[in-house]
Length: 422
Image 1: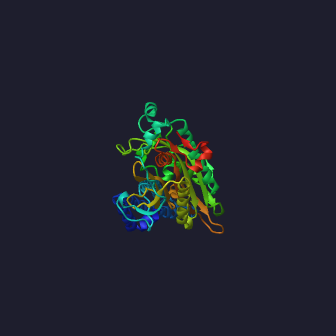
Image 2 (image 1 turned 45 degrees about the vertical axis):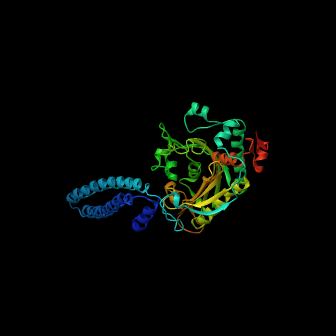
Image 3 (image 1 turned 90 degrees about the horizontal axis):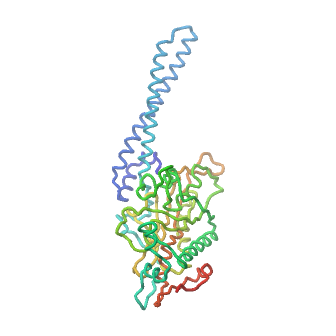
């Protein structure tokens, strides 16, 4: 979340950021109204406490002099009762203020292009050339069914629409990709973790999924818990409510987890295949860094995700998201989009984001600089390294052969034990 003091001191800047993101600036109005009242109540409480202290001193003086303090005692009682009521009101206002502040998105970095939606994202660079086929390339779902490595029909019978059953070499390819990505990431200094995939409400609030995106989440009602939409949630919350030492930073984590999303609002989009599933596997990259290092941290994080695609020899492009397409908690995001031959287009396979101190404020993750008083909020970053299902799609479509077989990328062959899927 944003710093309340920053919002109160810079309402014009926040309104401009909201407008650039496509939000109604009116979402700020309620917060400002509540916060103004909160400050007035707090000021009143402080004044009344001073009054009560003066009354207490005067009562003590009268008693010492043997005089009757009854009138002052009655006034002090009225003042104490009033303070109790105001303190209750202050707690209510603090709670309401926090609820409204949690709904305000992060401020986009000045380098983020201003635009209304994904059509105004800016391409930064490309790597690799899309393969030219001498036959009509098939979609990954047709390849998967023909090779008997993906079964959508039986998955639908088991769980419903937007699920897939990986079989045989398909299941092995999914596992090979997971192990390859984790091995590569750990070689670069990321510590591997395997976190819980069911988290509490506080964890979801910490990374920004709640309260705004409750409609996208799979919830367990008793006790209130959530299936994670991304490993970003449990991994970022590893250090919730902690104060790290400066020497601890930076901290890099990588994690494989299954992920779960309701995909609300996506009906009619990508109804076939693996692009938009309720359950999918992903390897995540997460960083905790000092504030001055976070934007260089974003560049290096993005390069680490790109390296996976390069080693798999999959053509892709890097796109800077515009303000209208930027995620709620992000200050800046690069999307990696891999080329899919059957669709003849680039599709997102990773989002790499800098959240500055937005998540750290929500999750109360701080650090203390050596030799300095007080603490600061860390900056958090994360990116997919990579979405495994979409990587599998790209391999099937880009490495397919005329006879229906699929060549295994060279770096995966030690994991697979075969060179080709027939």
